Length: 111
Length: 115
Image (tube, rainbow over all chains, first blue to last red; front, side):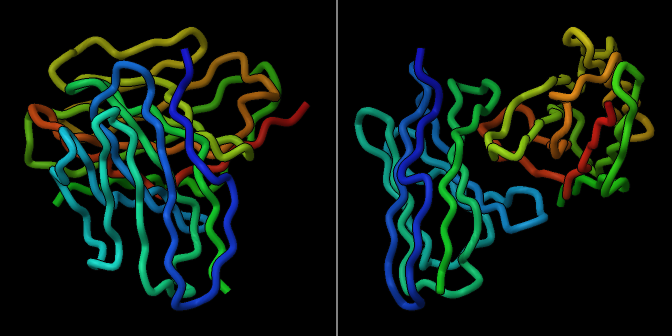
């Protein structure tokens, strides 16, 4: 049984560019959440998707958007990248009200 | 708003010894969940243990156990018989119950294990 997977593992972009990160949830999980983890900090909640709708959102600007597909996989898009967007982006999935399980993350570096 | 505080940025333990990591939280909710996640250098966030607030019994998973003090809003993690593979960042996290709420994390504690 595959766990949560994310792609790519690493990414380098320049300021002003746009980026798309991808996440496939664990089998049987219908809810996907995205977190941003800056160096030396705990993860911060970006948003959560359920039934292809954004159900909950953290304190992140509209430059951060997402999508969930019918197979429950999800994308995180970030527009107009800033240096401060450099971080580890974590995807987590859960079934119903179950515990969230995390993927290995995507390390984004903005130059 | 709910907050999670980990007051120990770094901790160290000798192999085979026991170590306790501290976590306090603040909430006005009565129904919630608490978690400890481990993040090794590989970056993968791994669930260590979970506690439901309505349960008085402290959760245990093999060498890992918690001391859940609901009135004091304290949730510490005890690691017994520490192993080299336990070296990692440990994050305490909170989630509201009754909804698909998001996790709120502390800043983490870096645990080193000395051979």
